[in-house]
Amino acid sequence: MPTNILVVYYSSYGHIYKMAQAVVEGAKSVADTDVRLRRVQELEQVKAGMSKQPAYVAAQEAQKDVPIATHDDLRWADGICWGTPTRYGNMCAQMKQFIDSTGQLWQKGELEDKPAGIFISTGTIHGGQETTVLTTAVPLIHLGMIIVGTPYGQNPHILVTDGIGGSPYGPGTLAGPDGSRQPVDSELLTARNLGSRVAKVASRLKDLRAKTA
Image (tube, rainbow, N blue to C red; front, side, top):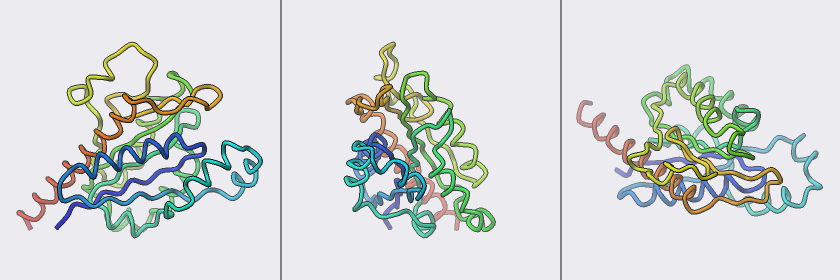
């Protein structure tokens, strides 16, 4: 049986969408892996408030064919990669609302022992590159998920003093103060490495469960 990997994300201006595509690419590089890309539902008040921003409108148009994430997608997955922009060092409200809706899955332990990776975007290098991953991990730990990072040994390109996103906690990108900066090659590489690592961990855990069943 293939290993099922879900990449679920929210993206206002397309930065996390590009990172999500790289995570998908990495997961697909692992043999016998099925991958789903899903986006979190936009909040109506946000849509109304930002509908006159050309960059927002263009990014939402580019993502319109990506299906909306459901609880059944979470159940289907053997491993999940979560993508969110930062909001004051935390995940965005859209992602928080989706995770907050998983009470029934939590009660039944349906996400327990599934590996989870987190990828993020911030405006600047000090805008929450580490805190956003760490705070996003908290509800995932409550759900019983196993957090998978992007260690230096597999990502030596993040051992630099340059202004790039990413850390051993997870991939990241920098949008810049005006949002014009796009993910660079090293950031996309870390994202691909997260996808492949979550897929490998999920596969091994699935095999172990099958042997001990």
